[in-house]
Image 1 (cartoon, rainbow, N blue to C red):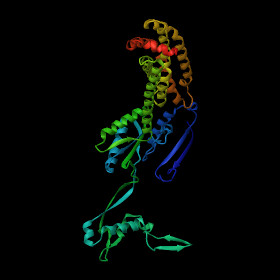
Image 2 (image 1 turned 120 degrees about the horizontal axis):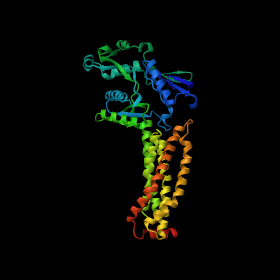
Image 3 (image 1 turned 120 degrees about the vertical axis):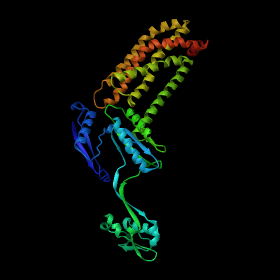
Image 4 (image 1 turned 30 degrees about the vertical axis):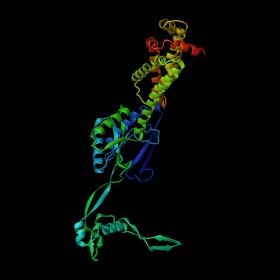
Amino acid sequence: EVTGVFSAVGGFGGDAVNQGMAYATLVEKDKRKLSQQDLIKDIRKQLRKKVHGMEINVQDLSLRGFTASRGFPVEFIIQGPDWDMLTDLTKKIMEAMKASEMVVDVNTDVQAGMPEVRLIPNRQKLAQYGVSLSTVTNVINTLMGGMILNGQTEYPKGNHRYLIELRLKAGQREKIDSLDRIKIRNNRGETIRLSQLVEKKEGPSLMLISRLDRVRAIKVYGNPAPGKSQQESLAATKKIAQSMLPPGYEIKMTGSSQSFKESFDSLIFAMLLGILVSYMVLASQFNSFVHPISVLMALPFSFSGAFLALLIFNQSINMYSMIGFILLMGIVKKNSILLVDFTNQMRGEGHDVRSALIKACPVRLRPIIMTSGAIVAGALPEAFAVGPGSETAVPMAVAIIGGVIASTILTLFVVPCAYSLLTYFERPDALELEMKAQKI
């Protein structure tokens, strides 16, 4: 199933000493028995069974998106004021996400780092021995972290002047016991051991504290579970997180999750804007506010046909099928336009509404069937595509075919009925003015 593997240990920058990654290149789709998703599921199961003590994520790179905010399909951040509370909430939310079986490979960008030693000053002892807190801070900072001496503390060498940094040798500051040997001089010139002035506490330390909009944040990410769509996984994750967050804490979608939401919102806005613009154009064309409604009656039936076709052929509502919906808005209106326009012509010749519809429907049946058949025939190759990348074209083609077939059949019955009913809302002289405008 695999033709090559490229691996990198320690990260490409060498800064991730406890991480590694491997990229697997698969053979051609028609030359392997397992699909990409089946192979991912099998590899995930094998790695978790055979490898212990590690966090392993298996991901389809095509799901990471093509925007600047590339990331996991399910990705969000948890924000709040208290870091300890954030870490506890993150663990609980991640456990709930795993238990829901809607998301797999759940992980976070927060990792327990190296042990940290905290020195807590005993102010009573500091006052007793005559040592100021700033003196303790400066001594520890200089000996353990290093400090560049100011003033005339430079030495020349080879036409260059070098600064002098004061610091303990590496072997003298690698162990925690080295802190006990540090002595500090008080205001009376006496030396006091550091252990007599502070208390030591050891514990794990985070390697990185991240923020978003100046608020502490922890990122949680994962992949949709097999058989679950990105929308379903995002909705379940958001519901879980919001039910567990206390006041003052919130979640925000980031990365691919944010791009997914923005793209869907943009497509829905484009669809609504297209309907509005179509109504305006049709209203100016027919010189009527009523006839465009008859034309646009075809849209609901096209969407119902597209939904049914996607369900029958086991396709999801995704970005590509949404593009198919937008295409349907421009395609299916032509049937109604042909019918309504010819009906208006018959009424202009003196026929009443009923007789005009009876004459127009049989005459316009042939061009409606011909154009709809041509559209369906043009989309069939994409709908039956089986080659690499066919996953992107099939949902759009299926949505178009289902929408065109349903709208063609239902429009022949519904549009004439809607037209005859909406004529009661016309102005008495509306048709006469329309025919004069068309002659002009």
